[in-house]
Amino acid sequence: MICRLEAITPIHIGTGYQIGMMDLIQYGKMAYLLNVRELFIFLKKTHGTNILKKFEGFVKDKTKTQSRGRGLELTLNKFFDENYISIEEIIENPSMVKYKVRAPFDVSGDIREHIKTDNIPYVPGSSLKGAIRGALLWYHVKADADRLISSLKRDLSRPSKKNIGKRFVDDFFSTDSRKYDAKYDILKFLEISDFMPLSYDLSIENVKTYSLKHDGFEAKQYDNFVESMKGCMEGRIGLSSQIKAAFKDEREYPLLRDKLNILGLKSDLNEEDMVNHIKDVMKEFNDWCLTKEIELCEKANDSNFSMKLDRLKRPNREEGLIRIGFAVGTIYQTLIKLIEEKDEELFFNIIDKLELHGLKRQKSYLYGNNLREIPYPKSIEFTMYGEPMGWLKWV
Image 1 (cartoon, helix red, strand yellow):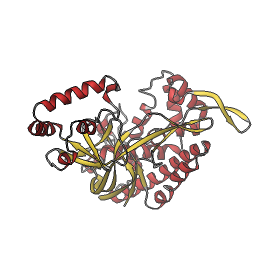
Image 2 (cartoon, helix red, strand yellow):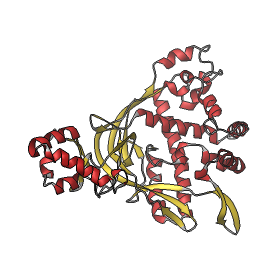
Image 3 (tube, helix red, strand yellow):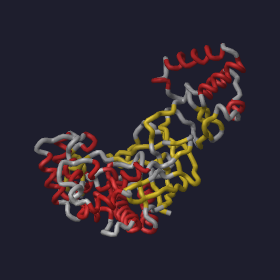
């Protein structure tokens, strides 16, 4: 089934690669990502071999005073200015410019690269599938969390960050009652292609992290520069052709019939029913997540962030949203908030036994007239312009 998604706030799906300040030129409100090999060939041809020695000296001199060479002092713009090299001559040469990206401010550090093919950004199907998987798990656990809570309590008898909750999640998605194997995972039969852009805008964003302190949000001092995209994308969500054969093979997949409801399927295996179920689940999940984040903003007395998040509730109700990528946050990635909601004592036991310092317990938050223990600090992330990251809308 062909589906379309529109990125209504900046999306960043990282490659793990950082674009360095010596890989780009900023000019006007744009950044130009360069083919450095072609650049050096050009410089050697137009300015002689001596320019390469100057470049090496420039880098070595600046890195003595700049940590790992980062900062506005170590940029290609700076080098070109010092050596009277025309920036226009570089950016107008198609062999040297790989692609360009909007940069509405001066970038002063490495940039997290967005995933691309042939320098075209896209949303990987694996990222969408991960978001859907988490929402399906939340949706089917929230109404009856007793099994999850019992499983987590057993896990805490031998606490391990790697294994906490793993057995429960494996069993939940498995279509076989034996030891978990990925080939028996119900989501193996859910196929999601990469979503390629029909139109897009690529820009650099500075994503700021805000932590909840006693007197409100406090912004972290560091910058997170990321490539991000907006635009409309198209891809396919459907069922693997293998599911019909697996459905008939009850010896190989004995729990498949019982697990079809996870994907909103019945015995007729209708793809449209599944996609509609996924949309409905995501709507309910996102509404819950937005409510929790708005509550956090209200604790911080931050009406601006609350308003930005509240504005997403209407398109989520009407068309449905998906949230993916960098700066999504733990509410969207794990069941930790649901556990806190259902069994606060277990929640704190998990934090204490696994030494989750990001959620460290402190007796220092005034709640009404009582001093109450809460996990603290809590954080939220927005772009420097106050825009939440990672929201896609079904079109």
